[in-house]
Length: 161
Image (spheres, one colour):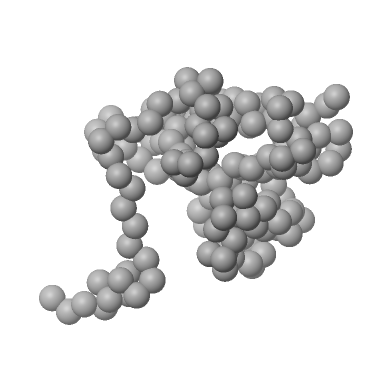
């Protein structure tokens, strides 16, 4: 059996959107997906790319993907790779595909001088959490993700001081 990981190309925009929607369905969040292929075209292949994606192929068939971007840590003065999404089709799990994706991203992080990789996981997703522990990942104790979006984001942005 063969696994191939490759960088996504503009021809993969429909595939990226497919995997985003499949992940959202798995996470019971499909109702939140508003992204289109055009969003991903600008994000991944625009004048200034803001993120990167790879496609995982098993026996020549796309079975998963990952999408990430780089941010910084002011505490250690180094970039970090933030994995926004990773998804492997349920029927293709257990073949080492997820582990291979993480290893590839770890190599990219090291090459880019990153001090760490980070990602979020839903607290009910026990299979993913167990996998993350198996590769050495630990939760960031004492920290809670905060989000400002929608009307609250707009209200703050337009607020006159």
